[in-house]
Length: 257
Image (cartoon, rainbow, N blue to C red; front, top):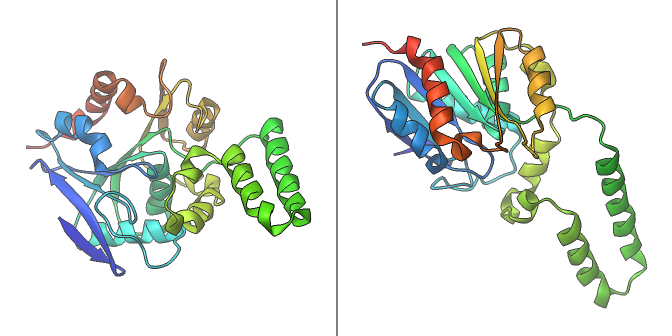
């Protein structure tokens, strides 16, 4: 199904017929299909909505660069348009950024939260990352002294060596949007969350490291944390059955007939 928000055609799916609604917000670059297993384990008890973000899956590309605040506004408009009330929000990675804003900037009411390896926290000072970023900036400046015939090739090779896989694989139309998002830190918004929250986190997550989970658990006063052992950034895919059972146990008291 499609819904048009701000001239963007956004694809969403609805599964199940339960009275309690769950709204799933995937990670950056992911689409609804990564949650197929979880949805199949919950759809007999809940009504579940899941979307493809603008620029991903079946949704169209935005006509202008977006910020995380734009994404939150789009999702809030979708929820309002679909007349969804008191939904349980499940967010992975980038989805957590949106949830942090949805639950603290809008009057829309939600019931509880489930956050999986979410992003948007100010990182610890990382000396190796700091040195790597500054080395890249220095080497990039050196291109000024190269002839035009070599400059483009040099910059391309430099970018390939230093850029993250997420950035390298991104459609050029979303590069500025990606920069807008990763440069916005949301610690203050996470701290304002008062809803009951379960945090699930991969023990060896290299993208959003486990110390972020500990920090988030402290920021959100009404939260509990479960570490998913021997998993990385996608514990709900790496240990599908275990994670789906943990989630079902967390949500089963919300099943209404």
